Image 1: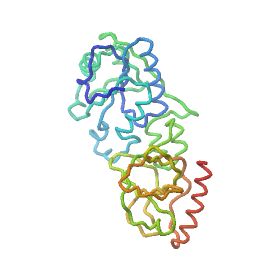
Image 2: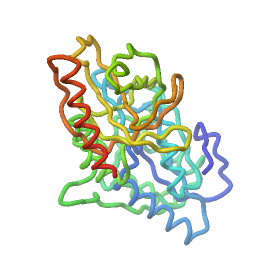
Image 3: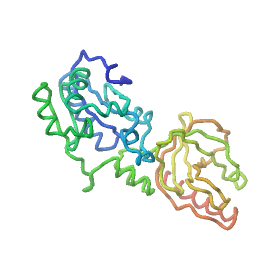
Image 4: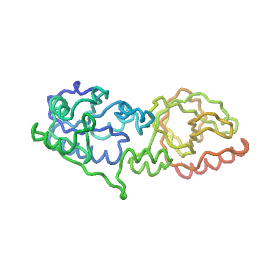
Length: 308
């Protein structure tokens, strides 16, 4: 997959089969669009293109949405799309100036002229251009003027629930990991760097790695204890992760801590990928560290059983 940092950077010699969207989560609904995109590309021998935007438009345009978290960082999105069979990813910087482009001008100047559009594959409710004024109806008119095809994808339904990034975010925010993973089509994950903590876990036989997530918009699940898989330098370990304020030791801020089962190496400053399997309990305050240790033994047995 080739990656371009703006629409003008894309070489427009070859006709393209194009889709547009933020694609946060690259979930099952997105997969249907991408699979159709790839099928048309293979049939026509053209180039598949996903046009996406960074930062997220809502972070740029809506001050009330500055705290909206995203399922994927841009790097995570690239990693997932790399596996989809997509030929080209165009990441257009989203600014207030860019948002003011009228829908008809956007189609003519960017999609047709710059991206050499042949077929546009989009969701049934797609809107675009200034104030999201562009609609399927307008796209149909423009397709006749500029000579491109439109293929509309209906909402993807799984167990009578339409898959959307918003619904998956809400599931993660409630700690409903298994359902979120079902709609994602893969195991939700985070990347983080191991930083130094207060090493209390080590004193009770459960050393933890404190995780720092640098991207301020990255979503992570609700507070609680989770069964996880931890990937470190291409090796996978079972683990249990606590997200919360550590009330037993009077913690005063939210932290992300992971204990790797049957592991004792020094991994400060290392980068970990953590995959969330299931929430196993809520975070709670224990009477003392001995009581906490007994609960952690129970948690470890649950993780061993869940992950195998």
